[in-house]
View 1 (cartoon, rainbow, N blue to C red):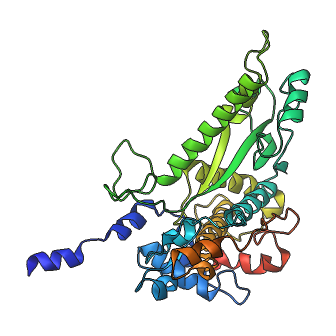
View 2 (cartoon, rainbow, N blue to C red):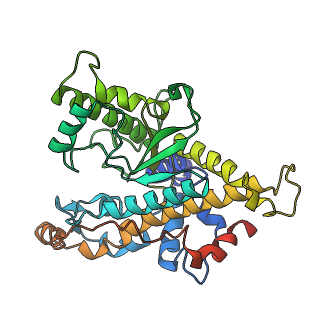
Amino acid sequence: MKSTTNALLSPTHREKLSFINCDMFSAQFLIALPTSTGILPNKVLLEMFPLHIGLPSPAMRPFVDEPHYIGHHSQEVDEFGDSVARAMLAGGDFIRSHGEMQTLMNDIFKKAGFVTTLEAANMFHGKVPNNILKEYVRKFRHKDAVIPDILIHNYSPDVNASGASTMQAIFDVKTIRVDKPNAATGQGVMYKTTLQAFEKPATEIRATGCRRQYATHTSKLDRDLGQPPDNPRPFTNALNSFHSGGVHPLVFGAFGETNETTRKIIKLCAKLIASKSSNNNISPIDANGKRGNAYNIIISQLRRAVGCQSMRLAVEEKLRRVQYIRRTPQAARQAAFLNKARQARSRHAPSWFNNSRTNQTFSEFYAY
């Protein structure tokens, strides 16, 4: 009887996974009440609570009693919807979540006073010799070129600034989902239920991989486009001339969590926004007080905007893919190729964070 009781009280594999990976951004939806404007729609909110505490997904309940499949590789649907969220579908469905987080972070950067460019195709101009740059522009198309998600032109300087008052900084947005566990260990490559002292959480693993991709890509450009004697590594040296000598990954995970770089950037943006004269009267409390000053209010707003958006996108990736679930593997593969047109990102539509119609609702966040 005692062993049965202990088995019932011990946390499940999913509960451990949720507990290890959730952070302060994952829990922001708990204090951001839903409103009539639909910041957190009812169907999304119902999925957020099970995701946060490691329970099965209500939306997957009709598909787990009997085998159901989804995606190009006919993955079997699991009770948590992980296979649904990571399934490969025609049309580039992942680009939708990526684009919304990219637009949100770009809006936050602009509010902090940064001058930004989305997907700057000319990031090497002025940093690489002209003859090599012409070859780079001629040979490498959009797919093969190094194009950052967000390029900031007036970031605070570091040791690479060479005395300049500002410098450029590269930011790359990454979204990840719970990866398929290994059959032998039951652990995923990134998402694990136990972390040793030397192991990193999933968001940090993805961030390290992002930095390595940039370094590998520039090294390949150096080999392909020649190495002049006076500048043997033109593209690598150009990458090192940016802030921190590379890229700043902004990673958003399957549980709404973020990496350490994103948390630091949010704090920096909150300080810059709070320092503006237009925000002097945002709080009736003394600016020197520990609670209720402009910085605390703004960082609370930014954390809830990022946390709610990240959790909402993780849930919506499952919900909008339900229509591709089928009873047989063959039908699942056929359904996965129905939408052949690639979804295009719109750079002109305002994000939820920067939409004037939601500003009033957004200001209600910190009131609770």
